[in-house]
Image (cartoon, rainbow, N blue to C red; front, top):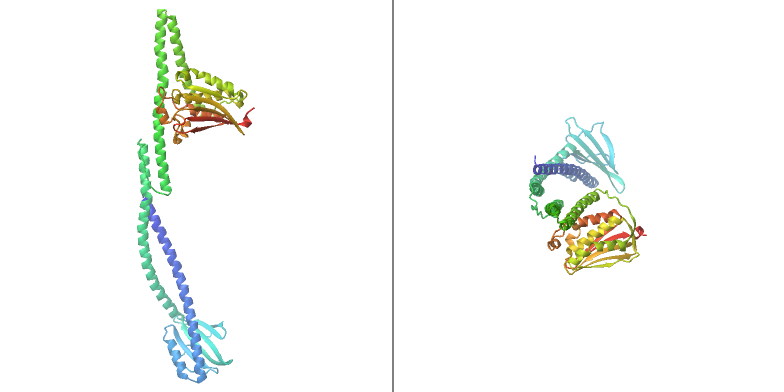
Length: 469
């Protein structure tokens, strides 16, 4: 049984149960109301007849009493109506008076009114109401009316039957509308679910460009939006994977190819006695081996950061000396691109951190700044001491980073597309910023980025003052 049928059946079942409960409650309430109304009517008739009886006794008008009694007896619920004076002389003649059994109990209903109820052999239940009336404080007459409770119940049942029929028609219409509504509801609920299921199949088949585009403002709409974001993220991850494979291939192939080709040249140089050339070629082999080892170390660092397996050994670090070492590493590259590297760190500034990890983080940030800064630009390494924290900054005059990319570039293998497209030469693997951020956070610090397209970028490493000496 599919979900649409199940929802329809559950909705219709709930509607039927609700209608049945409401119908039962209304039936019971209506029955109680009719019984109470019949009781009030009986008392009203009794009081009205007693008043007529008193007036007839006072003027000795037997005909008035008889007419009042006959008027009552026109009702199927009235079996007998009698009127007598204070000494018991009847004003209304009875041909076959109703016999009251001795076991009939008498109860007081109100002042001067008594009630007796009994059941006849034929199954009919009778109720006799009697009321003594006075005039000028003296007993004047006694009026009595015998009601058939069975006839009253039959009238009530007839009214309830008619009411039930009308309610049944109304409930039937409501049920039909409910069935139609449940079908529409089930279709409205399962339609988006089917579209989401279709989307999951599409993504599972590798169609990562599939989008649901379900324009709803409810939970299903939010689920569809989350699914579309997931598909977009998977597409980005797939692109990142392709870029990573291409970059890794380049990062591995280039130094390996250089090592292989220059190894052949070195062999020829040695065989030919060209020792000077062999030395130059050996330096190139060594540099490419270093480049290859650095890339492999980056991969290992990423794995350690994700596994929280970094070995952090904090010590007092002289920031100016550390930053000067970083600047010296990139002096040749900066000169090659005509980039000015500025240094603005107090000589006495110290921070409590792991020297090697902090050096690597600053190195990665500086390398990133040089890569994206155009020729003739400027890279600045500085420090800012504020209440509660020390901030080490690496700023550049590069193309800047769009707000949408500022969070994700710290993820591994992520790179800002517009900025990356402006880089000439090797594009990198997208590991540098992820490693720098992981190294800083492992030491209790944090990293921030301030950037805007066309205005360069400022990467900040922040340590709390309590971690300084």
